[in-house]
Image (cartoon, rainbow, N blue to C red):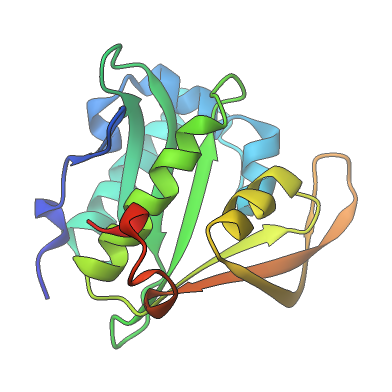
Length: 189
């Protein structure tokens, strides 16, 4: 298995994926403090910049120990931080992993339209994974529709997640396989 630390930056036509350490901490903290993004991802919301600094350091430890790939998403021209995406929870055979993405509220939907197939293609054709999955609340319609548009199939995850309004929402597991996109040039890395 290749060392994860060598996999940066990843480039798409308009965006650059690189380690969170290369972005302004205050921008990453704004994303990590967002209640909606935290709830969609099923994580605790950062309460301070110090919390975010610890998170960024922890994410780099995961990368250096080949346990996760976590990237900040930046605009290639303006260098503006737009969100994050990660591959993690790899199975023991390195055939499956979870993908999770977050974006700042003002980030255009087109960003993830370009990033998701790039990262999925990287996972399948560079890392050799056979399957990617995401776990999302069924009420996260924009994210669910985005993934469904790329061929992710959904099934109940048999768990719930508490949203910022206190509502418990059923989760979906959305899955995409390498075979589904093997002939799709949008996913070729």
